[in-house]
Image (cartoon, rainbow over all chains, first blue to last red; front, side, top):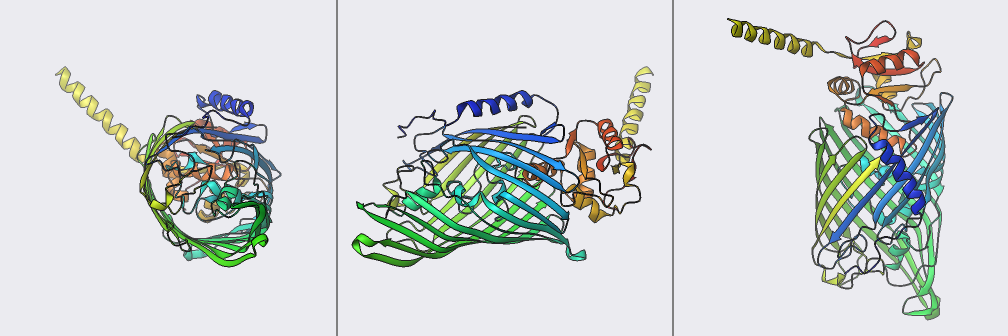
Length: 405
Length: 142
């Protein structure tokens, strides 16, 4: 049973201001964003409700129901001359304990497009990863409340949402073979262990130490998509590395001692296929995360080097029925390849969604999941699952409304 | 007699309306300053999808989009092989992730025509019957 307050919010005044702006524009027959001179302003506010069965809490504390599920964003962009552009977006979210309604700078960049074949973007940049990572927070561009969580884990937003650095990008025509879109990036990211950090909970879930600090040396990678000669079909591969993740804190069984984990090179690879045909969107992705992990507790002489690996894939289909309705479904599978003996090592997720666009600014969604297995479920104070080892199946129901402009 | 005349009038009217709908032809229009610029299918597609942000004459690509309807669907299908809904989502993704500035969106073809005629570097789409000499017409997909 969820005994926590459902009305927490770190910045209610800011969120109220944004909701008021969006509500005022919701009745406007005009545009998908507001222009103030050359500056284009846009944003969204989403509020949802989650509930899970069988006392399972996933992806946050959801058993018994929770309205601690929302996102708010406000962005502004401006062209300078014909090839330069600057822009930024602030963002806040809450998913149970995660996010904590803390306002963060989601992206802020300067972009110079030399030519369609080559451009440069620098600053805080959204991380290209698979088909949909850059739009992970954008409820308004998809039929689903949750993208397949094996690939797009909302709890790991701190690792995957954006980075501080630079990116080269472009599109290369290949004649009758179609075209290729590419991105290559290098940078770093600030990994928070503050209250509400999903990454800290990911580390905490190992049950070894309570993370009080975390550091990432660098993140880099590449993303390449082939827009094939078949209209609507694109195929892609993305690869990225988290270079030297280090975190430490009190050793859980004996807090006077310190424990730590080091991931020298944590790698991610995603193979993607997307096919748009008339009102249909089909997508499939296969992802793998892997790397060495070194766990140390010097106070008891523990120094263990091992491997960590997970594999995930999904198949999805969605169809826009008409201007008002869109439906979608997916099957997603997650496998914890290096799960300890006795721990859940797989999780299947069947999801079905219905999206209703009240108008171009307001939409609502209903989504149901049947989840078999608990390999992707945490057992931490933010998502307590003491019976996780029983590996029972459960359901997740989600309802969400989004206001955008 | 009167009812027969009425029925035949109605049939005639419906036929004319159907014929007009069949004859609707979505076209792309660009600002007159772009006359003589390379505007082949690949260039148009690149511009409409945000990959090309500046024309060869140095003006910025500014897209004027009809929000919905058969003309929008027809033009976008021919030019970028997307429905109006898919095109909207594509630009929402770009605008809210730092990848571009969203098109100007309009309810009517008359508004699109006026904007493109008055804005250097602008590109839009509407029915061929609405286009006039104030813009340059490019057939999508050509």
